[in-house]
Amino acid sequence: MAALVSEPPGPAGFHAPTISDAELAHFREHGYCFLGRCAPLADIEALGARIDELMLGAGADYPRMMMSVCPSETGSWDHPATRQTEGFKYPTLGYRKIQGLEEDAVFRSWVRHPLWRDVTRHVIGEHVGINRAMYFAKPAATEGVRIDWQCVHDAASALQCRAPAPACLILAYPCMPHHALPCSQDNSGDQGLQAVTVWTALDKTTLENGCLQISPGTHKLGKIEFGSTTSNDPTLPPEREDELTARKIYLPMEKGETVLLNNLMLHRSDANKSGKPRRGFSVWYTAAQPRLAQVFPEYVPRPDNDAAARL
Ligand SMILES: O=C(O)CCC(=O)C(=O)O
Image (spheres, helix red, strand yellow):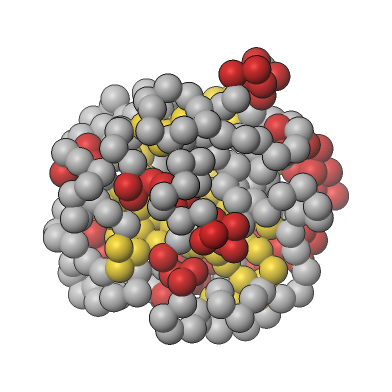
């Protein structure tokens, strides 16, 4: 297993281990903050190598990880390997989503990076948990899937609206019949945001391979009532679509660069037309809760048999 390089961050061409007031202000105002490269490239290479190992099944035995092969490979959202369920499916680089990665030492090292400690101390507080530590990819061979405008609600509300609810965001994904995912928001509502997503590019992302797209400022526009997820069409409320997407920007990123995302800000991404992988690692930090893995100040694994593991 590769280990993360432990060079001291700072003037070596990547971000310092603390977030600046200006960056925090930008995050709060616009709903995102681009941080650039936050660690040596060797650390990113180690994450990329490790995720490939996990996907190919070499030395990986993580029954609590949620692993889902992309429907662009299996041909169906209903395929058993595409349903987001615990455990390894089969060796392929075609996984779309792997969650529970904090259980892996290499990924946990990234999740507990000093810069995320500082960011979360400002946004959340001293005791920090994670709703998910997620590999999210658009595989090279099969293009992956487009995701339409989205943001994601908190774990509790997501659990309440499990599969049957058409407007349920995260939990609707495994059962969706089409190769397009719904609009979504990634947080708990409009009072007191205590969450932040740290999204890191494990490969260079471009317009061609489905880089992130965001709609800055939408975290301030209140709760969005999404439409049905059973259509390939965008499911933003039509009467609000112009308002919600008017400021859309693309976020192409170099390999290893990171952006902070407010979970209530709309984001989307296209399929991957490049023939090369588009791999990302996205960590959703929130206030520590007994049902979640805690990552700061100490790592405390998620309890067994917890429903949050199935998000
Ligand atoms: O990587 C993407 O295209 C979207 C990932 C995502 O939805 C997230 O990190 O919350």
